[in-house]
Image 1 (spheres, rainbow over the protein chains, first blue to last red):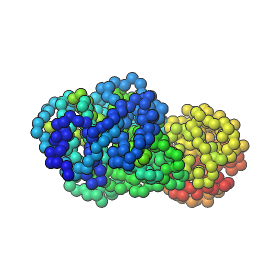
Image 2 (image 1 turned 120 degrees about the vertical axis):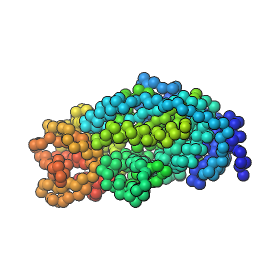
Image 3 (image 1 turned 45 degrees about the vertical axis):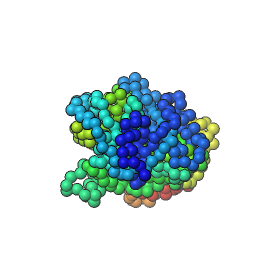
Image 4 (image 1 turned 180 degrees about the horizontal axis):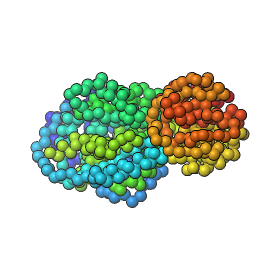
Length: 387
Length: 185
């Protein structure tokens, strides 16, 4: 049994720890014996060696952490030049020695109240957003991209209690891929809903989300499904992502094994409905963890399509580093099984600077004003935590 | 063996899996062509991809070199690549079809497929063929039921085939059958 004030003691101890949503509650990882900071030069070696741990068949025979957006570009041969940023590491993984199960209702009361009324600054205002938006629309017309996601960032400077933020966030916005990383000089608080890789033995699945509908009193799951089915724009975006994920899986799966397991279903969250599909396949023989990561990351649903040309367009347009945003958090077990999400709906707090990144898709019939506002709605749930 | 030339698209591996149902397949990026595999192959497939045919002169040269010598199949951009090499003009269309499912129809009696048959297909294209289009031995054999845009070409004499839509998309009905018929033609 875990003591009542376990989380409080852990938080006060300043020891780094990670909490990750599990089926029934959360898993907590701590007592890290290794911390690996990823760079262009060591990332491949890290992935290859992560499955060569001397396995003692313990629950802690794994590396848990995140790949930032830039390093995932590097892995597939795309280099990003001249972006500004907060010089945050490109990726960090930890080897835990302790794993504990926590219930869905996290037992933690914050004793020190830190409130901030500081306003968030946005890095791209409505007018500049419109300019980028129109530029990308031209690229869609000329066929260079079919769908592209523009990232905007909200920032402020505040000291935060990451555990308190996380507990409040999952209380109001529980998400299947929620996680918290708390380390000495940074924390990541996330209610990501999107699983990118779930690999057990030879079976691999991915669960892309494309389509978001804000809840209201008149809606229920059935009506939400009817809305998406009728809405041509949402369907087109979703179709594109399904075909793209099928293709990514086909790079590493046996011919004929890639199947759409759940086609266009609705998932319900506190404030919104998501339009979701589940796609899976059987891995080919001799596929390495590195092959899997290179085939699937960065996750297509948050980039656009086709992946390579769209990444190149994004990287020349975006002047600031995406850091963790649209990277992946998760773990690689020593037996090669892995689970990774897509880092969205997340706060990065580094040296007391908070950064919330959001993006929404540009397809030919999107409207700059709507997409700009959708970005704000997505960021709001996280910004509300500061009040 | 079927050699698929990838134009760095995010749908190419669906094409690879579809063709692997019928024969061995090798697939390389258009700028990393393996001459040996290319020469040994019986069928060359030009994949979908971003941009326009003029962006891929290497693929155009391969088409010109092997036309009439090997079976050639083009999908989406690959279809436009063939038309571009046959002096067709590829232009932007007003309505853009990215992720669309639409109904098309077999319009020619000379097609491998039955005339007047209608079926649903998946489309990802912002460009289209400007018509009229005339090239020796080529015929437009399928069209969009609503917009009448060219959806397939066949040259049964020199074994060149192209689809503007995506036979490998989950949005296309009977895509595998379509490919099977072309491969056994």
